[in-house]
Image (cartoon, rainbow, N blue to C red; front, side):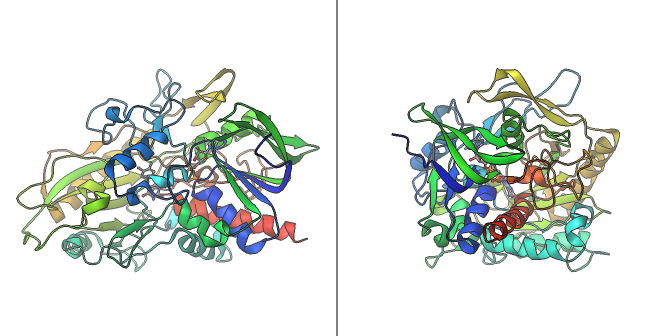
Length: 508
Ligand SMILES: Cc1cc2nc3c(=O)[nH]c(=O)nc-3n(C[C@H](O)[C@H](O)[C@H](O)COP(=O)(O)OP(=O)(O)OC[C@H]3O[C@@H](n4cnc5c(N)ncnc54)[C@H](O)[C@@H]3O)c2cc1C
């Protein structure tokens, strides 16, 4: 007997924060609707979708990470602890790299393009930075009537975003003050150097709890008897009949059986690479599908904080392995300074640049500047009709080039990061380092929204795919602008808009 229902009102593909947003909003606004969420990866936490950093036991945490690493999950001994300063292709714990097709000869490619396959998606492994977009990062069509800010605020609610979790960190204020002195002239209250909004909160016992999809689902989804999450379930096809979404075809990874589930609405929230893959596999192939792919080139630099009074007492790193000395500081993107800056203590940083100083723990901070891409339709992920990937889905080939403008922005970013770093402390290296492309894990644009169906977008402002009524796409792929800031909050905000649209249609 198949474990799946014959039909539901809404089928959601993917349990990262975008898919979880649909489940949450539908549970709140359409509690009578039957909703099934299909996730190809296993459940690795209790509650489902929680962040692995909340797992106290290191070996249990490592096992949860390994189980997230796709169809050929590696042995945990093979774990690398991050992308290091080499050209080697390495995946971050909890993620797995695109096996092939990541770089075509003569192009830059995305050599470390990566994904996660587990309940909770990448948000079981993320850093939780949730800045709002600024200036040209914003989506004009949603800004016209202040809708965008309302959606972003709703996204912050769903992700449990706070700004005070690191207020007791001994060096956070100092780092912020020094960056402010170097950078704030001419900036507005919104774009001044400030605490990074983070999807994290402090428990009563003082420990940090990082938000994953569990927080997005919330009790309302977990308590919704009409909602079911099916893990280890690969959606191989969206069924389309008479120009309408009609359901999904699902392969049960536990039994190998395949089933068809009828649905009035289908939401594909399968990340910015696999959402267009599933549409392609379903014969839904709008001109812009997979195009305008953009990643944020990431420049990193490390400094030892100058003139530091060593902090008293023990670091709270404890169970989660996270040191909390300097918090996370945000240097917002502006059109004049077109970088998203993230400054944080090294063991929370995406790249380990140097060992911390045992004499003054917490004194080394990593600076990261993320660059917005010069958008090109030719930057794209293509899918094969013959070759398949590790899940048996259409194999991907990434076509991706940095333009002269991208090169100029990156060159300027390298100068700016040294200036900012020197404001905080003494550099550990002569020069900043650019991570291999794809390292940001912030792929966007491949199912972008647009105001009209003119071949440059895949879906409407409400995320409904042009020409296929009832089929919605979700996640960072829907973002049409070139953002430099971490995109998850924006992706979730757009998912809120789509989910409300479905809830309203269900009520008609
Ligand atoms: C180490 C790390 C640090 C990060 N830090 C930040 C940060 O600070 N701020 C930020 O904004 N972002 C950060 N990110 C990125 C962030 O996690 C993603 O932007 C976010 O998770 C995207 O949400 P999503 O729901 O669109 O996709 P995902 O979270 O990737 O979820 C997609 C899910 O779909 C499933 N799926 C795919 N195909 C199928 C299929 N055919 N059938 C069924 N299921 C399928 C996948 O298994 C996956 O679980 C980070 C990521 C990592 C790994």
